[in-house]
Length: 460
Image (cartoon, rainbow, N blue to C red):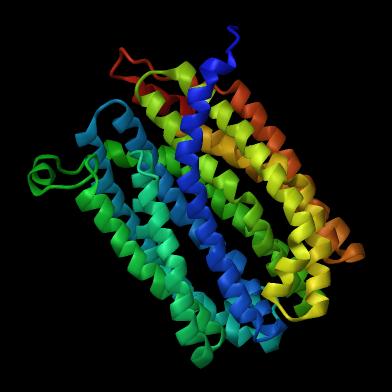
């Protein structure tokens, strides 16, 4: 195999960084919103924090489905733009918008129908059920706006525009502070949900405007819409790519719901500490998700252009960068977490337990970075089924299995030991798949049937 010199790699590393930085900033703004909500709700006491922590995994479950919808269509956009087929990319955008709004409407109705019963199902204490129920109800109402924001943000990133989503999501943070300041004093925990939902609504509509009316690759026009009608092949491809991601997100978030049910009997302090530890850890993995977004874009566009070797090289570069950055952020958080928790909550017992648990999980950050970025690179090729199955086996067998064994004796630290072990296993599995997948070779620049070949491979 030809050895690549640093001189040859340098411009590619630079391109990864240029694309990753705005995506990382987008992740930072998302995390800052979580910090804002946690800190403002944390001032209301441990029960208030526990109420949000109780339903947080359920919100991740619904959010994971909206993410899968975005993945199914955005990968096709990246492939078409990489191949110079902008009209086809715009057709994918139109189909994606219609599908996403239908799915979001169904999820919204589902969330509203179960919000009053969910805290009881999760084993929450009576003292926190009411607040947890109302917070989840507001989240359910926000789903259509969250879906619009996720979909259009993914489209913009796959077109190469990483800056616009970063700027708009930063603006969402500022709006979140403003709306939380208005609503939390009047509505408590539910006010935090109203504040976040209001900020998301404003930004999602602005994101749609930038994508659908301003982007040179993606902006829609009536004549083209009338000329290119419904195309079932687009939905078929979206289903092939997005369905495994959706199944993975549902199963993984379901496992996290089960983990919450395992933690719930430990009491409000453990629930709150777990919620704050997850929030603090999210600052560590934001480089991974930012670089993972860049990996999807770079791999997808090069696959579409028929440059398969370059696509895999970009994937490998991104994985190394993701692991390196998350190792650094994990190390920093080891020392900074007491300060972070002092901002998030005034409860000393919650702070101490959260720091103890988080430091266990931080040991897995480098391999967690590998799993995040490798999944993004593989998604850019259209390889989603096998990675999804690997992730499912990892979280259900390793994390839940170890949690059942450890939580009874060690409490919350036992859960985080199980989680850290599972993240290491997942990272190794994704690294193996990145090395062995055949999806990088499924596209041929000289053939018009490459996409159908890729989809046939997914079935096998």
